[in-house]
Image 1 (spheres, rainbow, N blue to C red):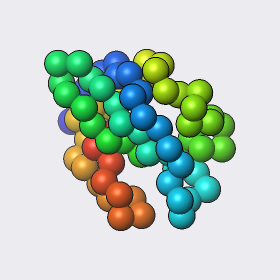
Image 2: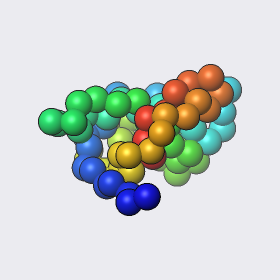
Image 3: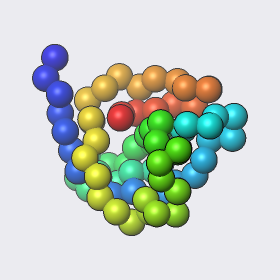
Length: 74
């Protein structure tokens, strides 16, 4: 499986209530659309600091549920 890396802009970001590690982000990938992505970076970043910034995401992963919330990338 080849990894597809895509740059996306974080539109919204919030803490996941029942987790000490997860942040839930809404990410705009331009021509690829928007996706919801969960990331275990809560201990290192504040949600407000990520909004409006661009990051590289792994785009072609199968959707997975973490704590009942779907993540469509990493």
